[in-house]
Picture 1 (tube, helix red, strand yellow):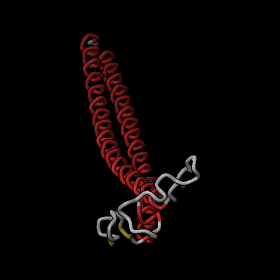
Picture 2: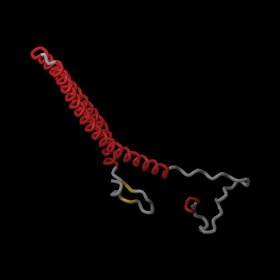
Picture 3: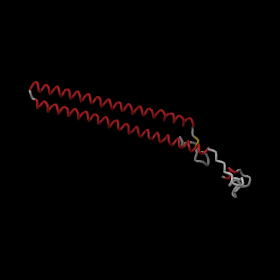
Picture 4: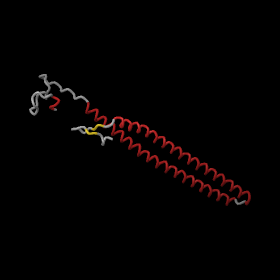
Length: 172
């Protein structure tokens, strides 16, 4: 929008559509909270996946314990039951760890992408603020020159380059 703005002659300033700029700023205000809500949803989804994995691990552990009890009761194979129980628990814990790792990797990737978008948006906002600050500085009135001992401003009449009678502001 700024690059396509109508340039002002003899300045680096450009005229832009105020309504379009304000609409763009409003869109940014709306977009940033939506990205934050999306990140919260992703975090909640990750927590849900971790909870589901934990429930699955607990179910597998319970099944392993039931199977171990069956083996002990039915066959008297205490040692085999203990080995099988440990194996099933290890498998369940490995599966739960893999699910957690996958959820964490997914959430991390989404949050990193969100961070990039938010950072890009923030840089755009900062550039807009800086541009507005520069524009305001250009429109700020120039300070009055300080009078010297003889009561005249030091540069008020000292300019050999300017024609006599030209206003002071035109000489600067």
